[in-house]
Length: 289
Image (cartoon, rainbow, N blue to C red; front, side, top):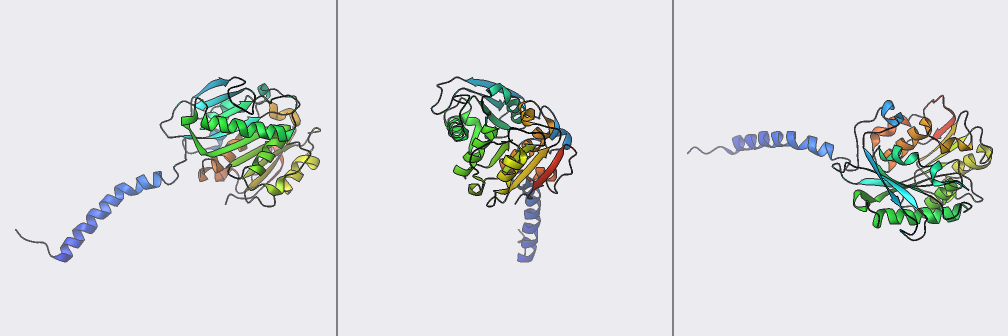
């Protein structure tokens, strides 16, 4: 048998290696972000009423866990892509869960496990709502019927009005959160300088309950230690705009959660450079870092 010379052997090995890498490289590229869920986004996909995932729901009766009232969990039924990030949403002062229920299926259909809540008492203030929100998040990720579908390291909070104020307090006290979205937040304290969690704050130009100049913009301006932040003031909107389906609110909420909970840079295009959106009066943000 004729033996190959060292140079010829090295040439053959190099060819084999290059062929092998040709098969491996695409797999490695696809696995570059293990948290990416769903197809490549488009403007149509982030503004659609329903995303790419089919959604189911389960009711969580009062007493199922400690520290929070009843709620509803919305979750994708297709788990072939792996686990999902989790979001807990808190309503506002004297507002029932029904007024934030629309966020549940809309966000879940984009690839998140979402829990909407009733507060313990309709008149609970933001600090109480924050405590309930975090208690529900703990239940959702450790004890709920869908806990095995959740990546407990990728969690977020969201809330409206006093629930938005509670959301900011949750972000301030829980730096391990991946994202926070405050919808027309109202609070007697401003905890913005304590927040490092990527935070998006919505306001409305006609809001007389949590006016932009009094509540939402000061909350955003206080985010001095937050590298990833955004402020959106809706045009022709008021405090109760957030309590019913709204395409603009849904679009940027989906983008924010996808970018920071799923670490999906495919969504950067919708917020950087800063959009010139006719549905907003003001749009301030930092490009994701």
